[in-house]
Length: 235
Length: 259
Ligand SMILES: Nc1nc2c(ncn2[C@@H]2O[C@H](COP(=O)(O)OP(=O)(O)OP(=O)(O)O)[C@@H](O)[C@H]2O)c(=O)[nH]1
Ligand SMILES: Nc1ncnc2c1ncn2[C@@H]1O[C@H](COP(=O)(O)OP(=O)(O)OP(=O)(O)O)[C@@H](O)[C@H]1O
Ligand SMILES: [Mg+2]
Ligand SMILES: [Mg+2]
Ligand SMILES: [Zn+2]
Image 1 (cartoon, rainbow over the protein chains, first blue to last red):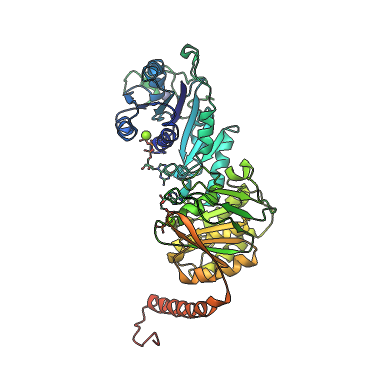
Image 2 (tube, chains in turn orange, red; image 1 turned 135 degrees about the vertical axis):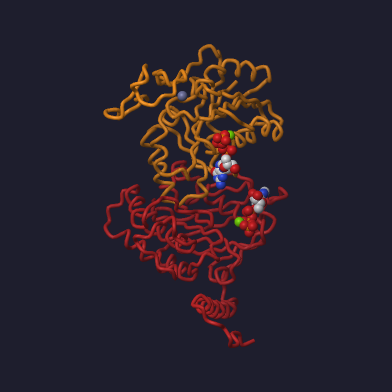
């Protein structure tokens, strides 16, 4: 089985990319789909109805969706295996800009909308820098100058990343992503899969539900306004 | 941009019913103008998308597009700064919250162009295409449709220095189509119009007629349509003058057409 992990900000076009992947490979393989979201998601029902593929979702609730993804990944691979899947696609809500959901032996895809402003790539942290492929959607809606600058901004954060510009609804330019997936190696042993990169550490009393404002009321890893340029310095 | 790009070749694919297309090849060279006409849904946009993507039997149409007679290197297909084609549609917008000058400077910087004055040249060129003057300090996001399209065409000509420019149905966008055609010819650009506009269609060197997802005819411009073109030019001039008068709040009380 091949494992594809897709992350990106809300409404970036992640599911539109998933649809293109399913359209391309559904004749040759079974594709299983898992959505990890915080409170609500509908993609599993939509994709099951549209393509008849095994699809399910999990809500992470109070947990960071990327952490939730790591927790359930082994189970998900086992489930997809039972469904006879050749490809498991995991779509993460990607709300946490500190963590990233990508694991080893999987293809990590970040989906970013070209209309999210030319500085957006600079703000995305490990969700972008640890991905293998950046799919830039809504390329149909932006000017040539903005296309070019957007690409440069991505390169600044992730110099070696494979950038694919697309109108994800039509699937233009997607041939390069599909080639990448077609050429992927299968997972031999799920036990060998690990989270990529080093996740941010740091737990404070806000994490356990204390609601007072001001660092004076908290302990753990805390920050003051002065002298705290970086809340977290990760990869 | 690679100045060596001499021509683009479109090879046939399939029509909407899966039948083989009946043209041999369509070649587009610098300085040429081409219009694509046909009813709604006939595949005009699909054809220009094939050109923009350098299709290689991997789009709905199954067509293949070559550069200088061969399959283009991946780099010029994938990197928008290296792509020899600029596609401007009604949907394309400048979204950045920047002034026109800053917006163009951003593009100049990203292309690492050092030539002085290129921003001013681009704005001046854009202003040849539109009646509503574009000011250097206007915000790009608040330009009108016609101004935006004019700026994008000018940007593609000067900063992008793109050999082939494709315009998908820009006729209602308040842009001087005949000026665009004349100026881009002078710059030795190839220009492809998807259009329903008789003036544009007749002004172009060649007219590709689409139906049912396929090219059904290629009409070379010849003297026989010159009279019609002359008449359409006159009508267009008349309509433009009327438009200006209506915009200025005049009442049009005289007989405008000598029928
Ligand atoms: N024009 C255009 N629309 C797009 C493109 N990609 C996605 N969309 C549209 O944007 C909307 C959101 O896309 P989704 O694929 O649902 O986005 P998502 O990232 O899965 O969203 P969440 O999972 O809800 O965070 C849909 O209506 C898509 O049709 C694109 O490249 N161009
Ligand atoms: N050769 C083809 N084979 C299969 N499908 C095609 C072919 N050509 C076009 N289509 C499909 O037909 C639909 C309509 O085509 P398209 O949008 O290109 O029409 P159009 O001429 O641009 O119409 P409009 O004037 O409304 O813009 C699209 O979904 C397109 O993908
Ligand atoms: Mg989604
Ligand atoms: Mg169209
Ligand atoms: Zn997190």
